[in-house]
Image (cartoon, rainbow, N blue to C red; front, top):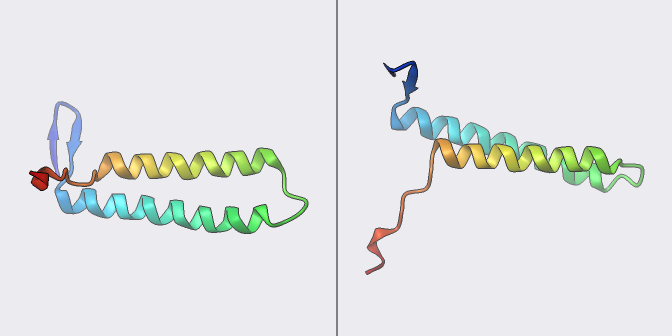
Amino acid sequence: MKFDNNLIQLAPADRAQIGEILSRRANEIAGFADKYRNNPEHHGSVELALSREIDRLRRLAERVNPEPADDEAD
């Protein structure tokens, strides 16, 4: 880890680990959300909040550890 202008620069392995943790948490919440949606007394506002959190975690995971570009298409 290096400090540069008050920003922390993470090593690629750290970025990959953080991305994996965020993805796992999103999947855990998605599993809970699926069970919650099957409950006939579920609340739409909670379902919406869960969906937003899943999306937020997945976007953050992609920003932290983006998939490598496929430049070998030629």
